[in-house]
Amino acid sequence: MNAQKTSVDTLISGAKIVSMDAQRSVFDDGAIAISGKTIVAIGASSEICSDYECASPIDGSRFVITPGMINGHIHVTGDPLTRAWLPDNIDADFVEELTRWVLPRFYAHEAQDEEISAELSALKMLRTGTTCFLEAGTVRYLDHVVEGARRTGIRGRVGCWVEGQGGNKDANSTQLIDDAIAMLEREVIEHPAAEGQTIAAWPILVGHSTNPDEVWRAAKTIADNNGLGVSAHMSPYASDPAWFLERFGRRPIEHLFDIGILGSNVCLTHLAHIDESEQQLLAETSTNAILCPLAALKGVFGLAAVGRFPEMTDAGINLMLGSDGFDQDMMRQAQFASALFKDIRQDVTKFPAEDMLSMLTCNGAKGMGLDAEVGSLEVGKKADFVCHDTDRPEWQPVIGVVNQLAWLADGRSVHSVWVDGTRVVDNYRATLVDEEALYAKAAESAAAVIKRAGIDFISPWPVI
Image (cartoon, rainbow, N blue to C red; front, side, top):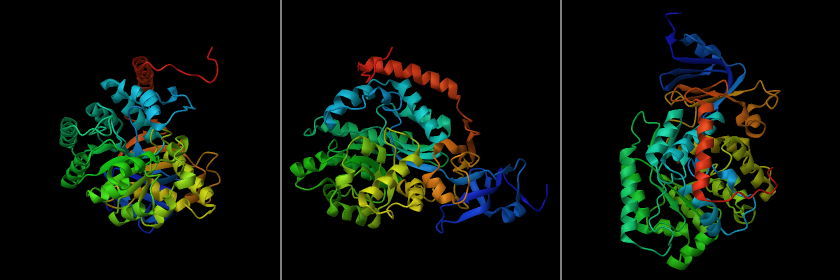
């Protein structure tokens, strides 16, 4: 090796690199050099390869390299093992659907089931190019969820599904509130966002109308004091605004503003039914919004009638994307989001390809408070990136990588993935997980959960 060159652990050259840096630099013949967990150089191959060398350099000529994608809202427990058991046409309101079809499955999970579910979810994300996620809320067994996700090598923020007033929206039990706050305090101590920890806890609330003000305030205080964020569901349906108006005389976002909850470290998911005044408060406080497009469409949130997401981005609100309990391929989620609002607004300029890629990467990193570490490929940031294989029919011919990434490609072309400088997917296979063994455990666990839940399968067609 040339002694004048700096030796690095990973050197990929000859690739097309979509950096997502502030200038949105795209390198047509680019290279990226990794030392340990960190990007030490990125740029034109001719320049990087003259300064750096590696024992086993990688020819990147068949790849488009992007930052790892970020899933801003995903249920890694509850849904992944048993989602397909639900009928496709449940004719029930939101509460009935939850109590009859959703929660029985969720609460039928035991500790090992949640661990397997989290590991399987993380594997699905990595295999489709997601390197970082924000959990929608673990049902019960957070320690096991952390263990399952951590085995895969993924980066994420997790937390138990906290409800300070349980199923009774009018309850104000001191014990429920104390227990909820104690859980929030305990989990961030047991799973701190310390240096070197890829999986850490956030205060995560169910949201809607399940948490009294004391729990909201405690979650925000814990987040502020520990450099963390708060995540919660809010206003997928008109029932949330109706409840807040009846109880407080103001809409949900107005109420959260009044009690000091909104801010740049707060991520609110769904937000389909907000009005202009709520939008203005989100913008003024730099609160992050998370759109789960497939969940909204499948759940009939009414986005075509009331969704304000293009207006929210125009107002400067940071918009992230999530998969919720559905397809974890975030590239497909971006396509849903863009196509939906182009059609609703009858405006082809809404959510163009460059905005789609921003929502998948740097917007997600900003919302999670990780933009100094991930979300773009820049010197000094963590080596979280994806190699998309262009040696596939959906990629050929390669003539415009930004548009092709947004509209023609999806997670099927994810060939290799690095997180924290470690290659966690190589040649379409996980490197840290025995995939076949995990699939077998997931099948066994799913059958046990369904049996404990006691929900009969309703098939649209006869199963022989």
